[in-house]
Length: 70
Image (cartoon, rainbow, N blue to C red; front, side, top):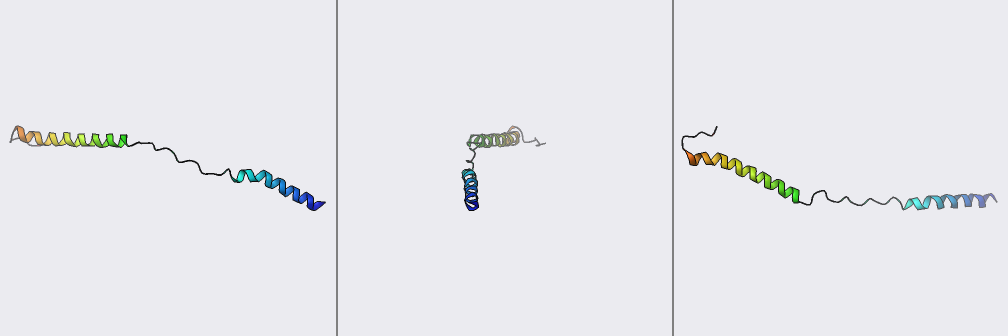
């Protein structure tokens, strides 16, 4: 009679624990935070700043030859 109680106890414990064994699946990957448009916009701003600096440095050479940069 004791062995039947032990087997019933282990069966009960396994019945309670077994649903939690499959519940540890991996979470899905997060969606990307940037679709590339913000990177393109950053590159465009950088190129505009470079063009502005080059224009600032080259324009005085056209205006007069006696101009010093700074």
